[in-house]
Length: 146
Image (cartoon, rainbow, N blue to C red):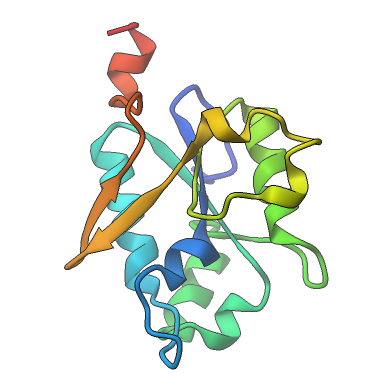
């Protein structure tokens, strides 16, 4: 099943933002960050839709692996020459989904006024993902109002 399918447990992941989290400036963005966030969200019952910008596969630490994930549609890539942030927010808007990102998306706040309510900041500490959203509940609890 393609990750492009929409369901009530979908959550959008700003994959490029995640790949750079906690990485020193002189180092390459890490695919392992994206995979750790995916695993954490799936453990919570979410179906993560991961979107990266077109430049990421040129600079990431595992270019062959990210190409494989792109080929399988396990990760989606914004078209070259476009703003990935727009696609991330447009997809989240269309799917009524939250967005995992540390980007505050300031240029888009007029177009997507829900950013503050739906953005889920995160940290990755020693490979462990910490999602900082007080009302981010496991997807099955969200569905049942629990």
